[in-house]
Image 1 (spheres, rainbow, N blue to C red):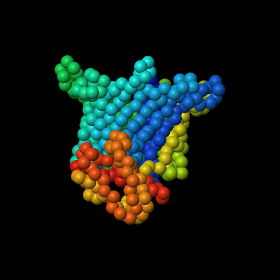
Image 2 (image 1 turned 120 degrees about the vertical axis):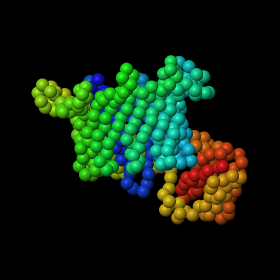
Image 3 (image 1 turned 45 degrees about the horizontal axis):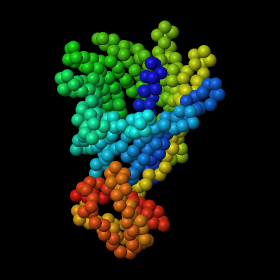
Image 4 (image 1 turned 180 degrees about the horizontal axis):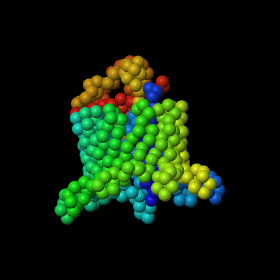
Length: 388
């Protein structure tokens, strides 16, 4: 149980601190391959993998699938599809599980996202389907978020649906305080239905070097006050501003010392994208780190251009938003146009002539956001088109 907690904490921190490339080129994560350490052969064995698809351009995936390796065969297990709005915020996510006996995918849950005027997600509602994904009218859980004036999350509340009372019941809550833009303290609470109040459970305090978090201390609630001695600490090392190592240590109350427990090491490529993640467990008998798991991350350049690059190319698309038609001009070469809807479905292929305005009838497109991929001998660019 201890290692599961530490793994969750480590993964959570990794996701929250995953660096964004500083160069103008943007990158998208294509896949992650995960390995388990085999002590008998002293090698890593490939166990499962993720694949991400980006049919809407940019760095926000529209489709994800997780495969589990059994013997020499890859078996699909879980997948999801995301739908985005015109602000490129996800508004729906359908989760499906694979039935290997029937060779079919079964829709399991669907998430709906709600945003405030600052484009912060404030509510995620999770539903199940009574008819295999035709309708989604059975609520399951909801997650609610609150923000401060800096658009930083100050409160996260998780609830579940009670079919007896037909209401959402509080389950857990995390409140966060900040010192400027830096996290200062997080408190996790659980809901007590008997007292109808939130009960303290866990507190995390952050320490910094400049603006980089270098230590997290975890405290238990003793019933009336917080323990003065943290039971867990995570020490974080950096290369520049990239987190490269995290060491989790458990407080040994009988010996009054910190003992190593879990370690995560991250390796980055030249573009500052995570390339490799290695985790290991501490062996008290040999006082060494023992390999546990390994992840290999694979990236590629996102199919988008910066504003400066688009201006240089000079391609014009108008009107945008479009109602009846859209014109595409300033093409110096004969090009190919492919139109995708927001789910990544290919809905149209066109040939664009050079040195003239090409008109595309948009009556056939339902109102919404579309992505135009224009390809010629010199390269490919992606543009957004809103049809109203």
